[in-house]
Image (tube, rainbow, N blue to C red; front, side):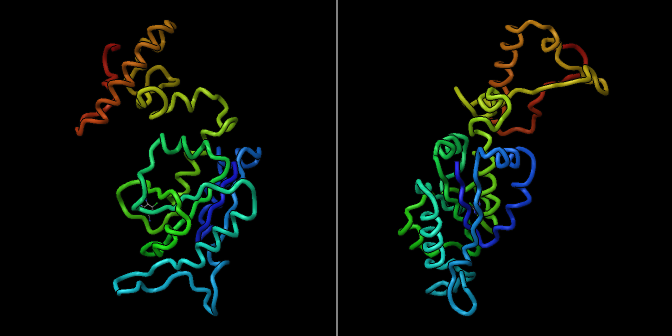
Length: 238
Ligand code: 6GU
């Protein structure tokens, strides 16, 4: 997959892309991420990318010309054309189903806004998919684009060592249940013991227990409550 990122602050991405799973995926050629600075398509002595809104009001608006011309120039750099995504708080809320549909694209073009938003003609001309990562306002789309890159890349074939681990993730697959709790050594820490069933070697019983826990955790996450979603580990086994 190729991912083109268009931003006024492309440097924001390098640190994150240079670490861990994303770095490994890039090094192995499983994904090709290209960063582009929208300001490279700005004109005039000040290379302006934003201006005051017509009709007045606070803040600045991203200008249509540099954004649209940047997208067109970046599209022309490679085949096939990228699926254009505009990161904006007014977009469709990101969830795992949307991440899966993005991961099925051969190429993505992620356009990050800053300031009070894009000139509306960006949407009219590019007909992008508009995506938000939640109901709160960020200073720009860069962190949202990184969220998308992170969530998409781990679904690409070969990125995770074990293909089962993304299938079993929270929100994935049948019913989109949360993951169940997990434990590793030691068997007991500060009086908290690993549930006995996980030590039993009875694979059917373990699978049954895990499925029950996934269902229970999902139900509890959907119910507003201050209760912990982990059962008490003190005392006897469940
Ligand atoms: Cl994609 N952009 C901005 N600026 N704020 C957001 C967002 C995106 N998603 C949630 N809040």
